Image (cartoon, rainbow over all chains, first blue to last red; front, side):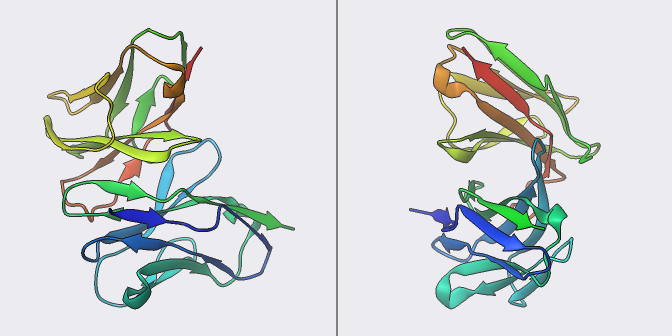
Length: 112
Length: 114
């Protein structure tokens, strides 16, 4: 069955430290892949998306993601985290059957 | 502000009742998507409409239904409500039907079933 997995439910980092959030997918073929961010009480905002081409994808707010086909993963990274990055992050995949699958989310806490 | 509006922001009702959630997409967007976000199920895709027609179905219960009107706004109808239907319901919109298109999410409607 198709799935999107985020193995880390919570992650805590210090402000200024680097960040990597993990996401693995299971599809018949490489789907469209997305990273969204959800701040408390708000809807989701797209950070970046990947379908093909370069394995390093640049997004908004200083985020980037590295796609690794061999590991069926697309991990989200940021070199230096700001306190305002505290939020919940969702990885999502889209298959050719018009269905979107979301991971369970990773809640990021940033220590001052 | 994504440009997607949802009303009401909060809704409290009792088991067995029926409610209607409303969504207005961004200007020019033809696709509307509905999602349910709950603590135990996470974020679940429910249904997609494109220009008035149902395009895709996800994990939508038979007690739930949706439609998209000629002016492109959409309504999600939830009937015979159960305690487990308490959740945050999001609407999103995108310009077309391409799965790779960015979806713009509304602020959500928080439904509480007592």
